[in-house]
Length: 205
Image 1 (tube, rainbow, N blue to C red):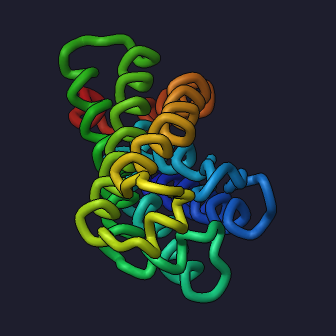
Image 2: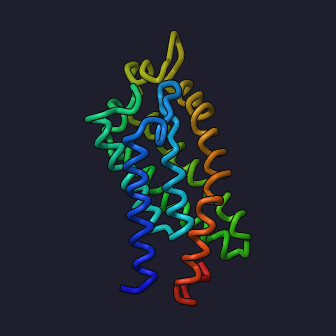
Image 3: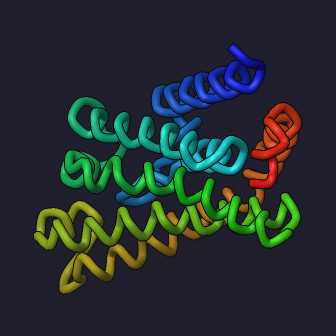
């Protein structure tokens, strides 16, 4: 096995282990905040995508999504999880596309000769939006019911769309800011090493 493949397998395994710990240990992966929980796990997915590539980002994001799906049945992280995350289109697909999107967006920016930090910040911001907008958008499409609206904290005449918009502002925006600030700090050393050990023909991405 080449050094390139070994490094990739080790980092992927490490990131999957981190995601497992983030799902098990309180406040390491989820911070209860309103009807949803603010998540720090997206940061791990983004690091995988920008440091190793879209395939690895999809792997790590898909792993997170699968755990989210299973936890919705056995150990929900929030009051709405059993209602919406038991649907794999809501729990798995956005996380998978988040990691893949981070990888492709980083590659796109680098091909246009953006700096590494700037490219990672763009990828982190867009990937965070991919996850948040897809999750909330799919919830809106599939779960137009009073029970779900009430679980999100709707009162009186408040609609599901209204409370989802509030969730976007109070949860998704802080997550995006955190990802943009922290992802490059973690991912740059990994990416630099990854670029050094890859064949010359592949380092352009």
